[in-house]
Length: 165
Image 1 (spheres, rainbow, N blue to C red):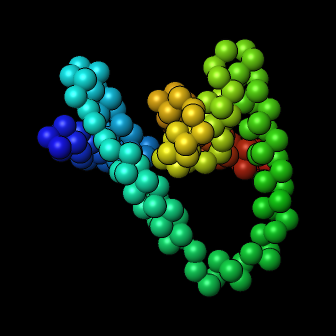
Image 2: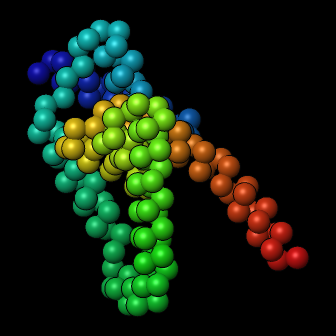
């Protein structure tokens, strides 16, 4: 029990620092890095499997809170864009996952989850249930997230100005 308490305490401190330092997905990333460092140096990190299930339930509940009656009424106007995104991203992510697997030798499940367009927390939690190497999934999603947050807004601004001329 003491190991679990220390792990949760370290996770809390790391999450707090991640938020304060304005790291993308700071609570998650900060907690992950802090516990990883703690566990690498001490080997005393521990988290019961039941906590992972609770985390998945909480994340599912948080996502569910984003829906309301307005969401339902907007679904009709979003049908075509949703289908384009669904087909395009699914095809692209699967293709990219296979390419990463073939080029780098990273196992296929880890490669596919690493290229999935979901959030870092969600994909890391789900990937574990499928036998992926979750630290690698988390790191590759972190790279994606940081890239999207730092480069994509500038690219969108550039292209929107370019096309509006």
